[in-house]
Amino acid sequence: MSAENSLHNVRYSILDLSPIIVGGTAADSLKNTLDLAQHADKWGYTRYWLAEHHNMQGIASSATAVVIGHVAAGTSKIRVGSGGVMLPNHSPLVIAEQFGTLESLFPGRIDLGLGRAPGTDQFTAMALRRSSRLDGSDFPEQVEELRTYFDPSRASGPVHVRAVPGEGLNIPIWLLGSSGFSAQLAGSLGLPFSFAGHFSPENTLPALELYRRSFRPSEVLDEPYAMVGINVIAADDEEKAQHLATSIKQQFLAMIRNNRGKLQPPVDNIDNLMSEYEMSILQKQLGGSIIGSAENVKIQLETFIHETNADEIMVNGQIFDHHDRLRSFEIVADIMSGK
Image (cartoon, rainbow, N blue to C red; front, side, top):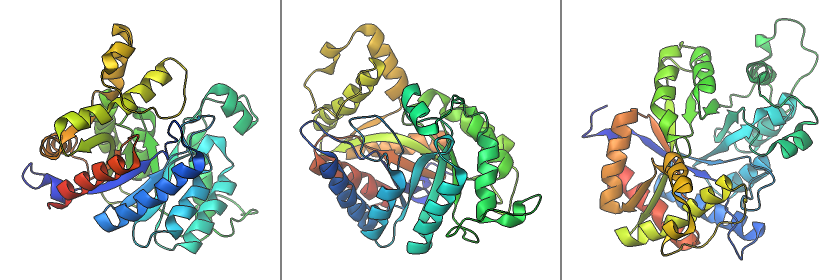
């Protein structure tokens, strides 16, 4: 992939955490999610993914399959899916039925991205799973069980339980990760891989290299296909973009302090809100974020795509004001489409 045409050869998609802002409600958040998805549908985004998180006051997408159905019903072309469903939290049969139902309702538009992390704290993971097994060590077996519900020919013996709807449907399965485990598993299974570069930038290149090195062609893919998550905060001028970015920085600062809450409004000087130690952790987690005016964002995106050789980018943008958020994703779409 050459630097000159890299932007226009790469698909661009959205990861939405359905942020609940200070002073807002989950209902407001879900309304904004649909509005953003409808704009993204017009702006040429390939897919719109929602993430499973639990016990978090600032995220409204915990019932991920339900929100996917809501977004898919309100859009026409864009693919809608999970980024991801945390499979160890669920019975593979239930996920097969949920996504089989979604695919039956919206044929050819549903993606199933799978993660192995709990997407929450240990207490909530225990409440979800009703089990003390929280390490995700059986994730590969769960993935195979899920795939077998869609395609019973994969079963090694008699099939006693069938997913209806689900069986026989071709729903793209992606593996998601922030380290090497899922990268290697996705490669060995010949599945597409999505890396969480928006909060694990240091691991991005090693995980992508491991995925590509581990890749084995399959009935799904002849060649590896890598999508990389990235935080992008864009605005019409540099100063405003930097100001807007203080909301996501406050969000990560709250996670560092184990004090998760709703998305905060921007502040004038975020450095005054944290210690040098917290600043270093924040830089480690958000150091790969792209923040700036359209001109600077384009330069940074070109560099990012050149370095990662990504086939697709998935943009996350935690921005307090909905209109500013829409504008940020519009700028990204204009850049990626060459407008």
